Amino acid sequence: SARYAPDRDEQRPRGTPPRLRPALGYGVTRLFPVTPRHCRPPERTVGRIRPSLSMGRIPALAGLRAVAIAMVVGYHIDKTVVPAGHWGVTLFFVLSGFVITGSLCAEVDRTGRLDLGSFYRKRLLRLFPALLAVCLVMVAVGTEWSRVVPTLGLYANYARVDGLHLGRLTHTWFVAVIAHFYLLWPLVIGWLPARHRIRVVGGLALVGILWRAVAIGVVSPGWVYNATDTNAAALFLGG
Image: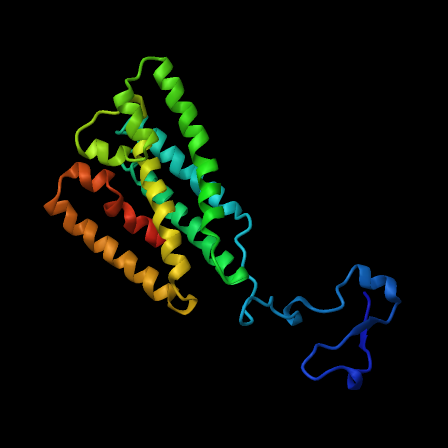
């Protein structure tokens, strides 16, 4: 293997890593980086130096999503086979909270600000076209507009609380909860100083858990299962 010898360290600025040259020729440097990764300077952001942070693709999330889907589908096919399948919905909320919170924090750390317009536009384009397509298909096969309007208006969860039967669009209550989270959470992250994130998000998660526990005894089961505020605990836990 190649052996590296330090160059003239006395000529380099204080505090910078030494330049290394290969003893077997400079062609080896194409295979081995000159500056070790841990010696590279952190990314500079607005106002101060902060370590680089980006979400990127996390393969484990795809596996967890697959588990959540299997739990939900199995629960609807046969509740006796997957009696706790409804926890797949909770897992989806946790994963959504993790991905969105990480993405928002990464943008703030990288640029010093949060582009709300860009975030809302991307979420809308990701969510609404598919939702609109599903609603149009449902109308074509005979679904009443009284069920479609709450879905397109992103308040299907509270329509269910009020007793409206959504039929084939029942699952869109989940989309409504996610949409409410997309709308409100960026405002919190954009306002929240980075040094207070863990305390505030952890506190919100605790409050959400306590509220859900209390809500079970003071509001209807439909509200506990469908409402945004009673499902916020899982979203906060993901954050």
